[in-house]
Image (cartoon, rainbow, N blue to C red):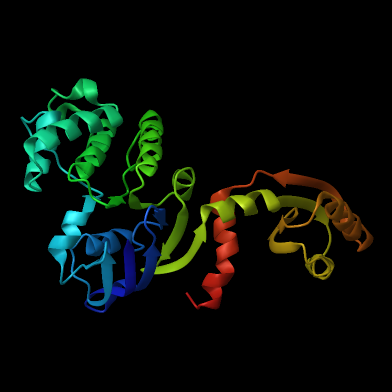
Length: 312
């Protein structure tokens, strides 16, 4: 449904996006994560036909974004990171106006407006002026607007930015419902943990490039198969290094003043032997604690090697 090949955007000598390669299968909800300035918005803007690529190709629902922009726009519901709303127009009129832009039959548009307002929990606001809605309500209205012409693909750029905690919960409910519709969705955020509950796959952008991609189900498997241990003890750094090399279950190490933080992939019985071995190696272990597994931290740690290996 979404496919890119070496998609690149340059501004002078600056590469906003470079050699971006991504495939999002039909019915998949894909989360694109990266810090501000990583190139997420530029990438989504190119896919939405609002920005022309410098080189490379991209396809939405089989339509190429530069040569077949009309087909892309008919197939796509796009929610930008910053959007404006019209004054003196009601919520219901707002949805019907956008449906009319896509030449949706008026009777069909009215039914869809009613259905989607209920779907995003705004049915009681149908006669309210759009500019009187809270930001969270406007965000949910924008998702309903994206669906009015029944697109097969949705692109949502930072849709939860600026929302209060309650609005974030309401937004997650909407996203779960969106998944149930079977749409192909590409959603961006700079906070990985926000996406973990409802996306199928996650990609991380750095410096305009897609640095790593992982399945959320795989990440959740890792989050239960891997433990994050803090081992506090007294020893020279060389003693720690020599001792830790003996245990292949230790897949990542961070040295801290009190000792080490490790990502440990062994069983509980192996963990007992691991701690005993550290003591026998001359390390004065005085505390071992398991830290809560953070999916964002784990994702970054497990993909760091792939990023380093590619020279990014």
